[in-house]
Amino acid sequence: MPKKISVMLVDDHSLVRRGFRRIIEDESDLEVVGEAGNGEESIPLALRLRPRVIVMDCALPGVSGLVATQKILESAPETAILMLSMHSEDTLVRQAMAAGARGYILKNAIDLELVDAIRRVAAGEKVLASQLTREPGLKGERGASLTARELEVLQLIVSGKSNKEIASQLDLSVNTVAVHRANIMDTLGIHKTAELVVYAIRHGLVSVP
Image (tube, rainbow, N blue to C red):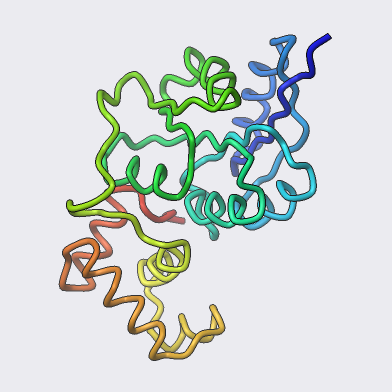
């Protein structure tokens, strides 16, 4: 009998995870091996369980799905990560693919696409939601990819933290935080903090409590 595709679920809503589990476990070739309720928890769990596929919510509290994806793939590059989001904007899709996600599907189409997408990313394919007509480019346009550290800094900027507070929380120097802030603005083509906050929220680059 062929080995089942092992799947780990990462979503901060237990009801959503329960729904996903039900959809997945109705399939004889798939099995759920673990669940995490936030990005921080997902990283050590993924490295312990080594699932074939991780179904990752993009908008997680604290450590976002984008940051968790980058950190997991640094140590477990063989894992296929399927990103789930409410957002279809090019910027966020681009970030997810740049972070290393192998697929990106929209939560409103989950019942139709989830199982097929899991099988396809497990087989090494790239999967984009049917509503997304093309894979966005990764370079030369507004919203080119940010690093995991820049996404962490961006999350804290949106939370209203000063450079000094961000430095303390991430154990960095204030100067390093200022460099990250400048790089983020340069990458996104934005020059004011207020504009940066609006852009990050509108495009789903950060989690809003």
